Length: 227
Figure (tube, rainbow, N blue to C red):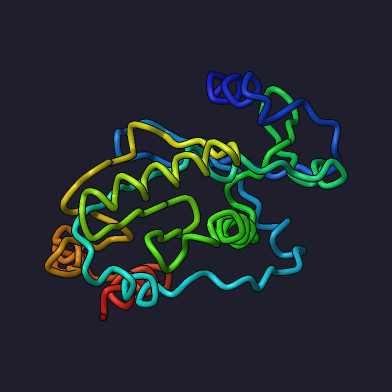
């Protein structure tokens, strides 16, 4: 925990706080077995005026991919952390630890409007290329092309754009020049779009839900792949 706090502090993402606000901290287990610190902004979110900026419909995004055969996928590093919080709002992001209070200077994960705000940014930045050879869904970027020659031009254009806008990718999660790609839970290639096989197995092997929350989780997953 102290190492994660130090890393966030060293990067300038958080700073010590004397704010009267103070959300609690949770720990979420990651796929590799390690634990990720998360701030529980439940109470702040209740007071937040909701941003109704629409997230794109998955079906609409995938309709653009007809005829494509070469792909590159870019995952923006700590996507939300690349946006600054207005100074007058920083105190609201405060969270408490056993060491002291801290507050975020960048947009933290867990805020109710974070996906909409980030989606708005990405749509404005990428607008000239959307519906042509680029799909953006929050911090996931997919570049698609009909052939390798086109893809070289498309990829160069987007990498230059990200550099200009100072949006940084996590290289270990990026894939370039690939004939098929896993994106938003679907496998995409020149033959079409297919549900990720691992998701089908997850639905088939799902343990019978025993609570309203578990029922909602199952219906959410099954409903997403209904198409």
